[in-house]
Image 1 (cartoon, rainbow, N blue to C red):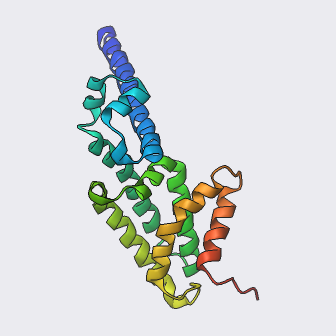
Image 2: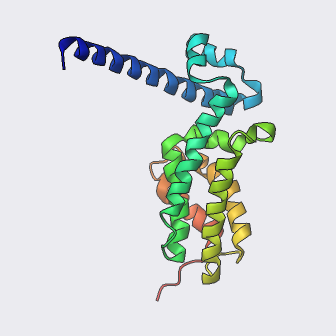
Length: 200
């Protein structure tokens, strides 16, 4: 590679790095604002003020705040689907623990995106509804595979799936500051959903 080509590649790498950093900042600060105020109460101007980023830079990455919301939340559900598919062949109890662990992975990946996903409703939910539906369907199918084993506390896969969807993120929020978040979260979810394991 000539020295000119090397210099161009180095500049391109620096520009790409700066653009990635700007995009990440927009996503992070927007998520915080959406959680604090609600998505419908946050404007592009609010996002620009919080990030100190120019309007032109915002529009380089996102066509509007709705496209930003979609890009924030969709990867969480897509990763969730992959995590759930990976545990499909486990034993019934391991499937349930795997579901809990999948939520922990998503929390570690982007806790604020997971929080935002649970707080957005109405017309805005349609921005990531397809990805959410795929995640939900994968979750329900797994819990239905567990139901015949008789380990669900309430005995009903659909009820258990709804319970997971409603309480997982709030429980993660409760334990978020604990060094033992994994142990505490899994124990809490198992306590709500699973019959105690019988020791022989």
